[in-house]
Image 1 (spheres, one colour):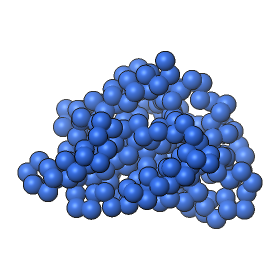
Image 2 (cartoon, rainbow, N blue to C red):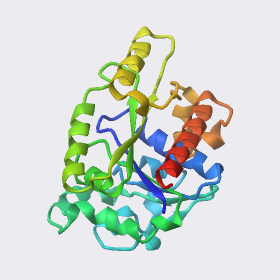
Image 3 (cartoon, rainbow, N blue to C red):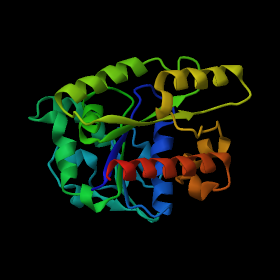
Image 4 (cartoon, rainbow, N blue to C red):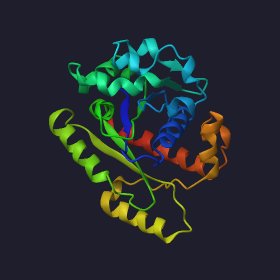
Length: 258
């Protein structure tokens, strides 16, 4: 049975989608069978893999709102071991439509039940909010990956996320855990960044990944070319960091399923 991770942080600009895409790609390169789910209406995980969203006939929206099966919508990417459940602009209206639906918090969980045995890992790129789409990601997941940028106010909003996680654990998904906290956008030249690293480690302890993702121009450029960093610049510091994190999360997933 594959491990399902939601990559979450309601604060935008923390490297959430960059983490989702690049960890997924490196997991595939490392031999895992991976499904990446783009649950963010911005659709950046989809476009970041070079897929033109305007040409897609169906998406995760059709799974959640129209009741299509994941198997009808999933795309096999040209990247080793990686499948994608894409997002289109339709997803922008999903929050309002979900409000009136029965079992609205568990729609994604039920949709993934038929395919989770087909993958080693399922990664969900959740939107930068705590709405119903993110709630679906939390309910469907075994564990969370939380990217935290090493900048001012890094922990702002994290307490609200953790309160939401505790509420989900009490009422909808008692086995949900924090898998890893990933420090991103690190600039080793600044004292502030070093201070934030220490703050986050004090707050989360051993949950913090030992690999810190640097602020890296090549990582920033790659999405505009529709490429993951593994293809755009595999020798960059950002590529080395995400490959290491992918190995770590794969190890975490295997330990969970023993």
